[in-house]
Image (cartoon, rainbow, N blue to C red; front, side):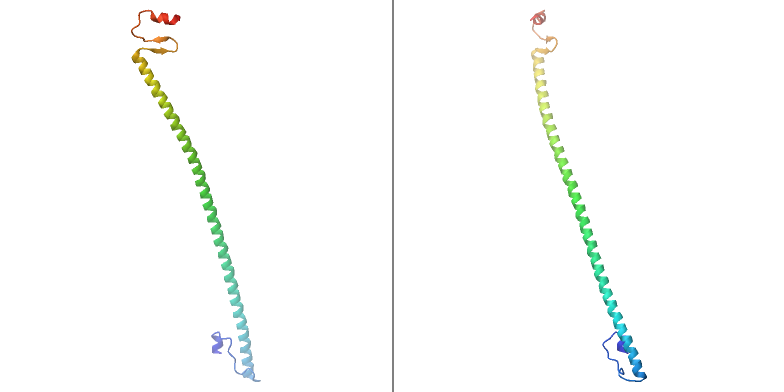
Length: 148
């Protein structure tokens, strides 16, 4: 019975074939042995089933984590791509603005140079009045200019 208590269900109980009280006692212990073995087997199967379910659940959770991670990374990539496109458009706009500013600066510099030259030579034309500030002209020369 000590081996049976330690979980050895393969032990053969002595006295099973006897037809007296010892045989009856051996038969009762044999019944306990069979029931305990069945219970141990059922518990082992339940544990294996529980382990399989837990493993499947862990696998499902890991798959969900992987999918969530993939979705998050995809969203980040989409955001970065969109920001990159917007940044590229802004860069094109800034380049265009810089080019236009350069053109305007060149035009202003040229106009300033021309105005400076006209002022220095005395031949600056006003849109409304004709010649203004001409030096070295005889008095009344501006009247002649208006008549022509």
